[in-house]
Image 1: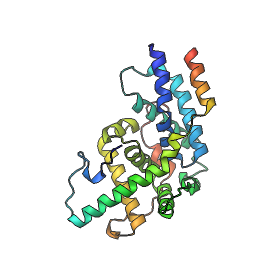
Image 2: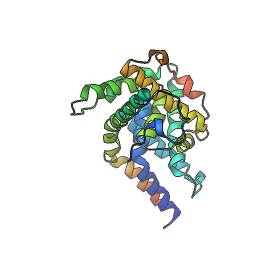
Image 3: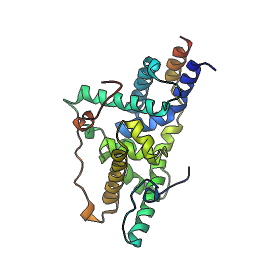
Image 4: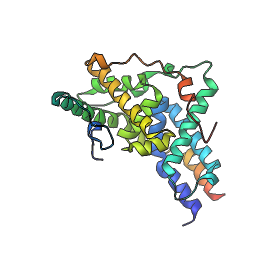
Length: 186
Length: 62
């Protein structure tokens, strides 16, 4: 099997996870689809820079993340990332805990994008903190901290207890993500 | 995928907390794990848009 075949098959195989990461970042399904497509196009253009045998998933997740940051940079003068409608997570869960699920969806939209992304990649993808750090281009300690703070904030919002641990409502702006290194696409 | 509560992950510093709080943490972790899967699994399972597949396959043929 040629390297090119392996590369394109890897791109196709990771699409579901990219879609989840994109939704975690954008909070909007249409925007997430656009982000995945943009990231795939970037990856195809940059495929020569991928070293076979290295961590393809981390490489691909970083490209998507950097594309998201790049898109934010383009529109940061007019849009705060918290302005995106929160209704995206109000999916039709036909369960008795539907209300709680809606609350969780709403609370997720209030988290800073980097914490939301970290939590989803660890919980939904089952990523280790080390893999998360590689995929998001940060230190392992930072990755752990993002997941921990996201979890603690959700618990505080949703359970409304242990108020001494409660942090103020996040007012994350694009600049916060833009401060992070963007090794592949600046 | 087997659920490993965040409070029980090997690489997390051991928290010094009362048993009742630890139990509450584990229950919340389990609920959060299930909730996030309900919110995001459908997205992951959606079919790949044909136009995206076309882009990838056209690049493969280059």
